[in-house]
Image 1 (spheres, rainbow, N blue to C red):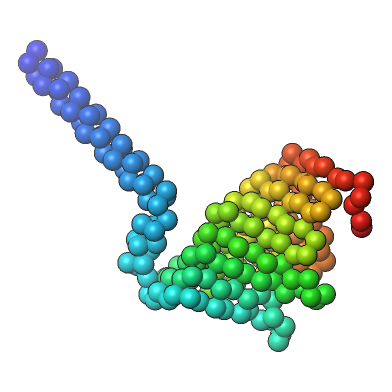
Image 2 (image 1 turned 90 degrees about the vertical axis):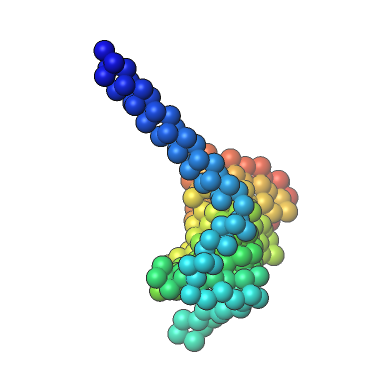
Length: 189
């Protein structure tokens, strides 16, 4: 009987230690994800290069596609990414009505020029503005894609959707999931 109690106490101790470890990891994870500066410090320790006040322009066949400025950038060669703090991106349009994008954080995938941004993402041109939490730019298709809820607003309309895809060349925008909006009778097309 004593060996049975010993086994029970040993199992109880293992369970308690496991729970303590899980809670510690959970609290640490939440702390890191809620404190972007701490996350950036961790990334910088693995970084190959860290730069302040960064500017970059992407061109294809001699035509500028976008220009980016950020407070800072951390280059991670192994992951082939450049982590950005407070990126501002200007996407160049043929008609000159460029799209201006801001976010809290971002990344440029150095092997493809694909851009991902997150945290209070806002983009606008002269006619409308949209807001979301995450956004991807696909340079191959010149498309902005938001897979998080998005609000698009202009002078005479407001539109909400679960997802959005905007082609920068054709200016055709697709909205999916829970699409709803308000359109004023003053809307000019």
